[in-house]
Length: 268
Image 1 (spheres, rainbow, N blue to C red):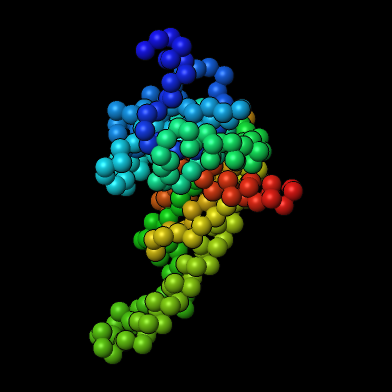
Image 2: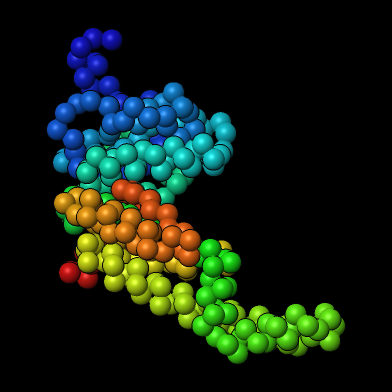
């Protein structure tokens, strides 16, 4: 291959796995020294076009994607970009295009204006996600200590055999569930009160486990990352033994891209 051919050769031969879109990097270095989806030897790189770039890697087409390694590779590339403070529009797992020309023509050229505006809105920001779940024994003790009626009902149920106390058991279960739901609401409000001031946007999702409190995401400017993390650490220390907090980030802004795109469509 000649020097001219090397400069014009596509960065990926064959099918392209697409992780997302970023502003076009100023240097010519590969994107990241990380294993790609579907092929650990295929490192992520850039397909550049008019000020933006798709982050892609070569992907085999002779087997389905979706192994745990594939999912981790997808997130690792995107989150590494976010941690480097690069704005990134993350794509859903499994986006594959047939070749570099399709990436340029059907993705980057057709979507250039929207991608550019979304990237400008997300510039210098990353997502942090807080997953909160109750320590079950601790929250049950709280419920019983704060609700004498529930505590008495629990004692009555404990004194009866299983058949005789069936309806009381149902009543007890419902009462405890309702009391924990009230706590979940108030604790979610407290999480937002303590952490939302550091963010430009927030999003919440219902927990997927019974002891879950909330999964809360925050879009945080880089200048406030350290203060946000400190506030989360202080909250975790305050709730130690009561609520387990797990903070993930900086991450690609998975939960905020749709909102940015909607604002563009609405002219906001």
